[in-house]
Image (cartoon, rainbow, N blue to C red; front, side, top):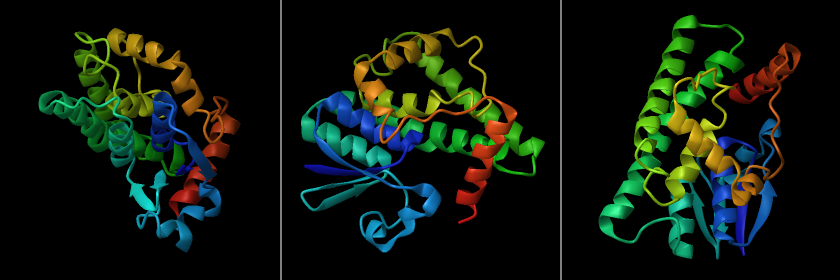
Amino acid sequence: MIQLYTSSTPNGWKASVCFEELALPYELHEIDLRSNQQKLPEFLAINPNGRIPAIVHDGFAVFESGAILIYLAELAGKLLPTDVKGRSQVIQWLMFQMGGVGPMMGQANVFFRAMEKKIPEAISRYQNESRRLFEVLNGQLAHHEFLVDDFSIADIANWCWVRLYFWSGVSLDGLDHLKRWMETMEVRPACQRGVAVPRPLVLPTDPAGVEKVSETSRAILQR
């Protein structure tokens, strides 16, 4: 059975949603980021970068969420086309998330939510770039039900991040095609199961609750 090491984060969800969509059995190992379990020697032996998610399959370790999605899709023979051009299209949109949506939203989260000292220029920089990337997704989805016609790992990767747009402080106003796609993704049973692994994440909206989460994020960032 494949071993999954993960936490309740967008990158972690990418792996767990993929497992659920592919109906691949896995054994869950929750990594507590608050206690720095991702930096323990036994985990660094799996992922030397000390980040989640990671998997181990028959003694073979895979880290980096995008690489995990490709590995699982190829293992199951689903969610990734086998023809050269179709495969390339899916990987292009996967890399779009890996190199754009994830890093930009991640930095928006840091500067908008986690940093005690607010730097307006940094906040606007990352929120604006995240919004621009959302507009690119919206344009693609204007002509496709999913990012590359059929549901794929590209949809999983991008959705797991975009669904937390509100936490990054980014608006979806006017992005009707993106909203339609998000609603389609949200009602998929496997997506619902996947984002509840290892446990549901409920982000607060009240100021006190937001500050408590921000304090935890600051503590993790300082390690």
